Structure formats: structure tokens, C-alpha cells
Image 1 (cartoon, protein in one colour):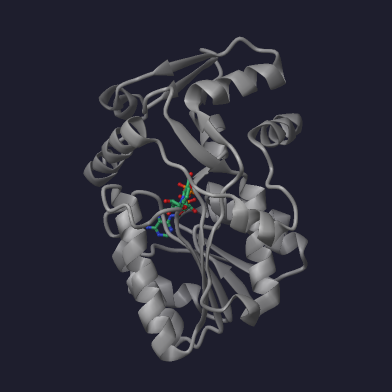
Image 2 (tube, rainbow, N blue to C red):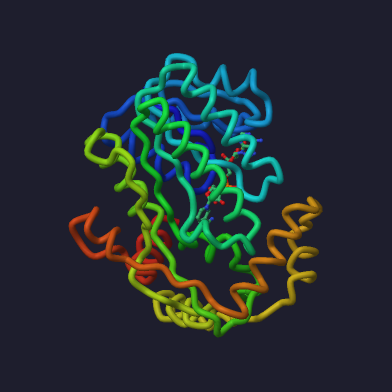
Length: 285
Ligand SMILES: NC(=O)c1ccc[n+]([C@@H]2O[C@H](COP(=O)([O-])OP(=O)(O)OC[C@H]3O[C@@H](n4cnc5c(N)ncnc54)[C@H](OP(=O)(O)O)[C@@H]3O)[C@@H](O)[C@H]2O)c1
């Protein structure tokens, strides 16, 4: 049985579905009954729990031999969730551990990257000492962020970073495909760290241009300063606010580029483009 933490989240759902579609037994974890919905797509077991609680971590690991660890986005305790989860996974005798991290965790100016860097370091040291088969995957920004942030009523995409700054994106289905490959091929990926980026380097303005091209719409790309953005999304948590502010500063000033070579090698084909992602996702709506 493969446990996917964060299985009810946006990245997690793609991974869960792809594992199930490949005939693998999956247990999904989330904080709310939302995770129960995954039974409808063939998940064998679910665990409603909080990664901040060691008893919930232990419960999630029952009858599990492999783990895909996805931590919640923008949690101040993210490193400790990872640390205690790794400890308990080792105690439970888990045979394979896939850590879903982020591209460029060395960027300590990004709060959530620093938490992921520390989890990677902990997994590497404890995993090596225990002889654990572990693999780290590092996606950059997921393409779904665009649709999550798109205001359909106003036909507007509001960017919390400068609209001409470029980022690299990845299709969550491409990452899910690689995760299934890692799980199926087991020891071949022991100790590896894979940056999993798509091929394009796109600004918010270019994302909207592609959206308009695909849909025939006249959507607008608008920059909103980060405080307005946080108010818009009613983001109250102080750690999350600081995390978004740091992202806005770094993306606006530098952009963030990742390389697609590893993803192309792992998939055995070119990664999915943003245009293809939109066509596939909007067709299903
Ligand atoms: N979004 C991106 O572009 C991107 C790129 C690279 C890496 N990442 C990383 O990928 C991870 C997942 O991102 P996402 O976009 O899938 O986020 P998401 O959609 O917000 O999903 C978060 C998941 O974590 C669960 N969760 C939240 N708090 C928890 C807690 N205390 N204990 C246990 N589970 C908890 C949620 O459960 P509920 O469903 O019950 O709320 C949900 O399943 C994050 O660590 C993020 O930094 C994201």
C-alpha cells in the first residue's frame, strides 16, 4: 500500500489518480473529509489527520510499505511535519520514500523552499543511515496555479508578482507520471534528486496570451501588490503572508528558471506545454 500525504490537495490528487490508474493500492491522507471523495476514484483507504500530530502520523503509516510525502503549502511547522514523519516512517519499516519537494530548495529567501531544503537534508541523512530507498522530486510552479488564480467573472488573471517576470512551470500529470515510474522501478531511483520542470519560461502576461489564444477570450493580466493579493484571498496566517511576500519579491526581481532535461529524460518525451495543459484541462470542464 502506498500512502500519499496531501493526497486531497492539487498536486496530490494528480499523483493519487495516476497511481490508482496504474493499478497500485493507495491510501490518501488529508485534514478533512474531502479526502474521503478519493474513494470514488479507487483509493483503497483514507486517513483524515493532521501532520502536526504524531499520533495521526502513526495512524497514517499503518499497513503502508511505500510513501509519497507531500507537505502542506505554507505551514510554519512544515519542517517538523517532515522530520517527525520521516522518523515514524523509519520506525514503521517503510521500504520506499518519495519526497515531493520544490525546484531550487537552496533558495533560503523563499520561506517554503528553506523548509523543504531542511526536510531534504533530514531525509538524506536519516535515510542514508537507515539504508532507506528514497527519491526526491522537485517540481517548479504547477500549471494549475494559473487556473486557481484566474478570476472567471472578471475575466482577469491577477499576478502577485511583476507581470513580465518569467517562471518555469510543469504539468501536474507529468510529475505524477514520473512518481509512478519511480514507485514501479523502485531501487533504480534510490538516492536520486530529480528537478522536474516543463520546457517553457513564461511571464504572467504570456500565460494570459496563451489562455486567450486557446479560449478565444480577451482576458486581462493585471498586477496586484502583494498586500492587496493577500486581502483578496483572505490570507490571515502570518507565516503564509510572509511566504507569499517573499515569493512576490523574488519572482518580481529575478523570476525563477528551472531546467526540463531531467523531466524529458524521465518521461521519454517532451514535457507537456502550458498550451496543451490548458487545452486538456479546459476540455474536461
Ligand atoms: N503549487 C505549486 O506550484 C507547487 C510547486 C512545487 C511544490 N509545491 C509544494 O507541493 C505541496 C502541495 O501543494 P498543493 O499545491 O497541492 O497544495 P494544496 O492544494 O493546498 O494541498 C495541500 C494538501 O495538504 C493537506 N494538508 C494541509 N494541512 C495539513 C496538515 N496539517 N496535515 C495533513 N495534511 C494537511 C491538505 O488537506 P485538505 O484537503 O484536507 O486541506 C491537502 O491535501 C506544498 O508543499 C507545496 O509547497 C507546490
